[in-house]
Length: 164
Figure 1 (cartoon, one colour):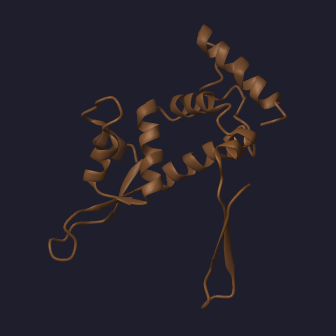
Figure 2: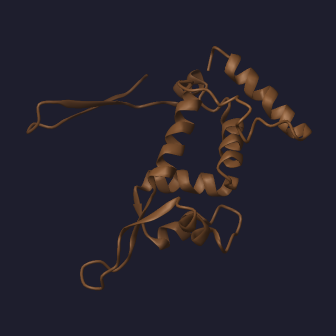
Figure 3: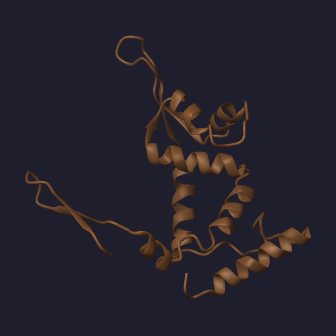
């Protein structure tokens, strides 16, 4: 790890240190080795589209956002007129602060606890701290089609991989 950033707060008795990652560090961690497989698992298990999941990851990084931020984030994804309402109705996005016409012009939104926990689980799986579920109860692990069998084989290989 090359550069090191250390943030210290004098009023408090602790320091927060952060490591700056380079491309080489991420490659050595094999972080994106199974990204496609984990993304497919998350989308199928939670009934999301690929674009919805990636948009939720983008919005999670923003912490608080407005409807306009959401629209700006959707420019690079496939056009879906009902995406906003569907994500709110299914509980992926929730209101943080309502608009009140005097102090706040816009309603502020945030991703829900359900969304945050899914994204954190994806990160844990990619880092190798957790495995994808392989039980027969898993929606993703039912062998109905040839594609399901191929993905199940890939999951088995991923679970057996000690270098991830």
